[in-house]
Amino acid sequence: SQQGEEDPQALSIQEGENATMNCSYKTSINNLQWYRQNSGRGLVHLILIRSNEREKHSGRLRVTLDTSKKSSSLLITASRAADTASYFCATAVEYGNKLVFGAGTILRVKS
Amino acid sequence: GAGVSQSPRYKVAKRGQDVALRCDPISGHVSLFWYQQALGQGPEFLTYFQNEAQLDKSGLPSDRFFAERPEGSVSTLKIQRTQQEDSAVYLCASRGRTSGTNEQFFGPGTRLTVL
Image (cartoon, rainbow over all chains, first blue to last red; front, top):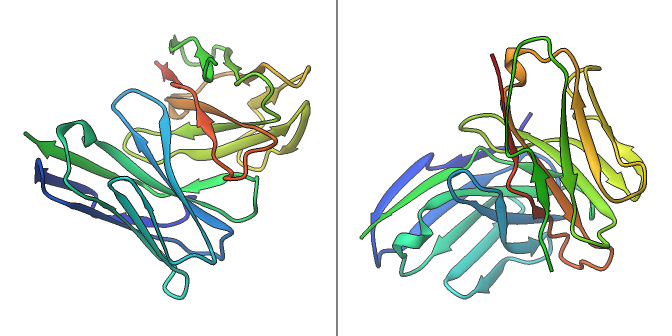
């Protein structure tokens, strides 16, 4: 069974707008990662945040983690049409072991 | 270098047939993972290898599913007597020993359709 839920399930925005996706999980974690999946392709790692971190940035991506609420958010700023994809959060209970994925958010960026 | 490759990319099987899905990880990567992704869902863990040792197979849904990595490199996921509920995308991922981020590198997947 999957770790938790992501919301929204689907998000449609205009190019240039910001997109925010949320993820909740159930158990204690070592780290949380976000992945992107374009239609018909494998997943691409975007960013990892460790359980002792609260916020992390990478380019146009900003991730926050609230371990007390067991939740994370991914913010994509100044979105582009090429950002259209499914986005998944994944938690690692132990370092190096399996990832437990959420159900994903489908993001559509309209140009 | 080359990324993770999987073959075949698409497989159609009649119910009851056996199938074998291949994964070529990134050269030198110690850890290899298999995931199953149903339509509209996130990937779900199947099994994990460290070199040739299968350390976790807790996600394999039934004894019809079998995975091996005999030489610690290429891995094969075998599904015997396929059922319609086995239809999914099967993703393989690998991770290097020195990856400090726990990042897994995914292949493009094999889409299995069982008729």
